[in-house]
Length: 472
Image (cartoon, rainbow, N blue to C red; front, side, top):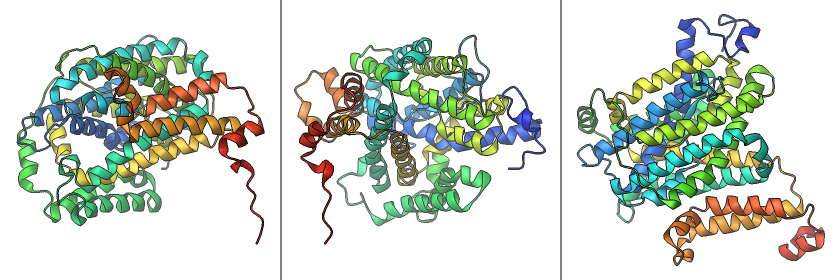
C-alpha cells in the first residue's frame, strides 16, 4: 500500500495521528475484514457443541444469531477499550480485539449437548474469569517468568490440536451428520476444498488487501460453490434474513448466571495464557509499527482491557475476547500505527452487532464451507505455536518437560474416559487437554533444575538421544 498520501513517516508511527477520513475508513474496514471470520467462528462452534439447530426454522436459531451478534458487538466494544481507553484500561494503541479461540477447548465441555441450559454456567465463568484476567494487569510484568516460550508455545500448539478435529468434522458435513451416509461425502469435501485452495491462492499469489482477506475470499468462493451445486438455496438465505430482526440491543444476563467451579477455574487459568498472548501482540505492534518496545503502562493497560472486555461481554452473552494477532501483522505490513483507524473498524463491528440480519446472513454459510476456513485457521494456530517453540533452547530438560506435558494433555483429550471417575469439575478440566498440559509444563519448568543430566535424559528416552546410525 502506498502510504505517501496518508501521512509522513513520523505521523504513520504515531498512534494519535488520524489519517484523512477518506483513507481512514477503508483502512479501518480492512482491519475488520482481516479478523471477521475468525471472530464469529467460536460462537458457531460453541452453538454447535450446545446442540443448537442451524436451520432458520430451528427453535434455537434465535440463540445462534444472538451469539454471533454478541461476538461482533463486544469485539467492537473491547477494541474501543484498547484504542480509546477508560482510565487505566486500554493500551491506547491500534489493538483489535476479537473472540478468542484459546477458550474453545474449555467452553465445549461446559455446554456439550446442554442447549440453552449450559449457557448460564458458561457466561458466569466468562464474567468471573474476565475480572480475574483484568486483575492480572497489575502483576503481568512479574509473572511472565513463569510463562516462557516453552510453555506458551506448547499451550498455543495444544489449542490448535484441540480444534483441528472440529475443522475436519465441519468439512465432512458437521457433527449432526456423523454416522450418516452424507457424512464425508465428496460433495461436502468439495466445498471445503474450494475454500482451502482459493484461500491459498489469494494468500500467496495476491497482494495487499486481497492477500490479507484471503480466508474471507475463500469462504465467499465456497459460498458461491455451495449455491451453484445445490448445497445452499435462495429460500434458506431469504428465510434466515426474514427471521432475523433489523435491529436489537444486547440483553444483560439473558441466559442467567450460574456459578460453576469448572468454568471459573478453567477461564481463570486460561486468562494467564491469554494475557501473555496479548503482551506479545502489544510488543509486536510497537515494534512493527513504531520501531520501539512497548511500555509497562501500555502492557498493563492492554491486559486490563483484555479482561474487562471479556467480563462485560459475559454479562450480555458474549464470548471471551483477546487481541488478534492477524491485525498485528496487518499493522506491520501497512506501517500505519494510528489507533483511530482501528477505532473506525471497531465502530463498524458494533454496527454489525446491533443488526441481527448480519448474523442471519453469516449463518447461511454451509457448515462444510465454514469447515474449509476453519481448517486453515486452526492449522495456523498450530503453526503459530510451533513458531513460538522455535525460540526454545531444546536442551534435554526442555525436551522432557514438553514430552510429558504433551503426552498427558493430548492423551486425556483423546481418551476422556480415562478420568471418568473423577468429580465432574475436575473431569471437565482434565479432558480439555489444554489445562493439564499447561499446568504440567509450568510446574515442571519451575521445579526441574537446569540443565538435566545427559544420563537422565538417555534413560527416559531409551537411549535415543545419541543414535547416530553408521553409514552403509
